[in-house]
Length: 288
Image (cartoon, rainbow, N blue to C red; front, side, top):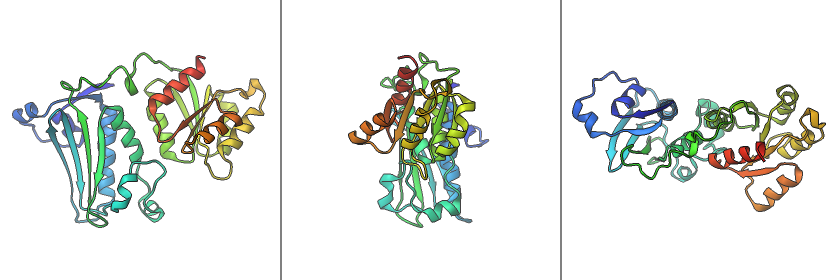
């Protein structure tokens, strides 16, 4: 669903029941986007701030207009972030410490997914923190609807010219955040995504699912993506041995691409994920 989100809309997203003043509605413009996805962005940042803020701390959310953009700030007085880790915060597969992950149970959708969703709306996101124990601020900026003339609404997640309804994709990645990201992005095109978090689970699912496309990570524990594609290519054609396959991997060198193709993938897409490139690859594989 595509919706316009203004200041009062953000209040509803955050559960505020205040009555917005008329001058405030006029002061803050509207952005063009998918209300459900924008809600996921705000709620993920808010729940993340609450999770890492101890009892007695404070979490605040502000909305303001900055020239031709709207800015959402989520501030907390919690755990904070090491300054040397800030440049890598939105990268998939990066954790500041495994101990933190075990204690707090992960980050829900994941900051990498939030980053992708914000970028898909033509926006930007960044984080700042004075250091550990000193809180953090996450800032999201989105282009205003009436001035965002540079935003191509016929592309990205909302390209209405691409319909992949009924296409079944098996996504294999030991990162649950990556699997969730693929489900979110591809569902916009009608794709049915089934996730497997290991090569063994993928093989067990493969024959019963009969997917149209395979998307697999390479660097997985126990059985990697190269071995997985070899096992699938060993199947008879009527059992899916010739399935179009995409390697979606952090191994992004030219040699890595060549190796993926040699082992049986038709396409190699590096991480961080470019959603448009992935959709283009899927279209090319199912409509050669």
